[in-house]
Length: 95
Image (cartoon, rainbow, N blue to C red; front, side, top):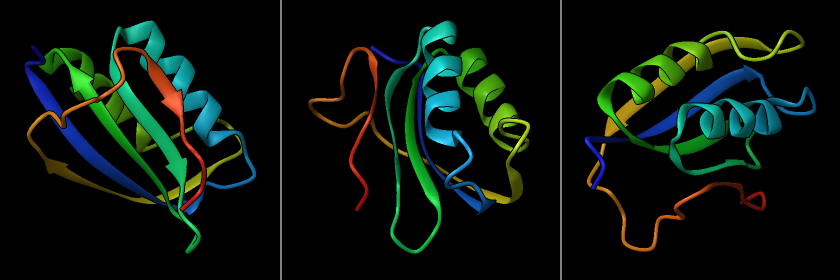
């Protein structure tokens, strides 16, 4: 069971810059479960689940993103771990 699960919404220049793949790689390296996807209105959203320390570290990294991104905001909401959350970390289709 996860220590902590959050829903993150990242705004700024975060689409078309490799943000989802960068997030997936960082999450896998940190041993997190969850997913990331683009939203049609231009944000990126993610669910991150794992140890408190690993989630906190990735949340901090989301505030900067990959080199080509320009993050202007990160909204974090603590949530219950959703049923059916993938054990690995996946990129989901845009919604």
